[in-house]
Image 1 (spheres, rainbow, N blue to C red):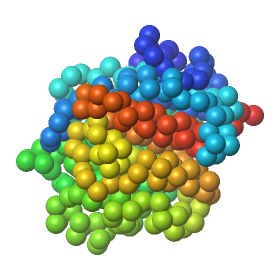
Image 2: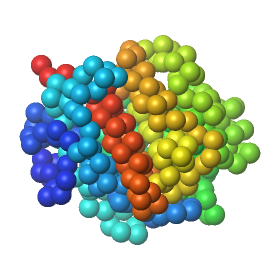
Image 3: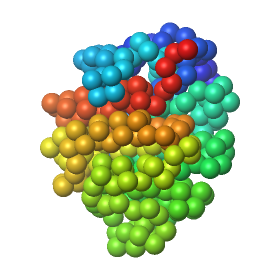
Length: 292
């Protein structure tokens, strides 16, 4: 498995040509085999990259420019189509190598289940890990119609691995009664809103390694219709960007991040990959140290 060779398609704007000198690596996880409603998020990573060419390299939110950091876009992982278990194993092995090379993983989904092996591997390196989960859905099921490998289960799996007291959920507005009860009893649970509760929580995480996982459907469908399970009543793109910048401006140590569930086929306007690419830009500028 090559880590140092980008694929032949588009890369995220301002990506370095050198793996060795990069502090972080963007990689795509084009899997959507377990979705419960509309498939298509396997095409998300490519469209996010294509949309990034319309961005400025400068962020007025963070007053930083992409030429101040160094990251490498390795392209999409080659996943065995239809084989969720083997795909997750491939992702896990890849991220293990990234972490061994001291690269921050920045993943592009794909369905949300792809975050599970990444978070698990990051936890193996950072035992005091906390997870910030920004999403419309709780993703706290133990299984979905008998299938334990489902995009509705990754946060439950992570909570059981690291302890629910280390998982922070924001923006949740959909799930079963049992999921909401579990979240209230075992997790740091902040439904419906993101930015204001996040600002309150961040000081309590100062100095800790944090993994940030964002499902694009936390946004209202009016801002991001191109997703598999859109949920009315979401936040604005402005609030999401400000939330990423709040994390970046805090004293937490972000050690990995992802953005998942962009399904471009449902958005002919392309506003979903456009906002996703901007969120990724802010992640890059906010989470990656500047060049030395």
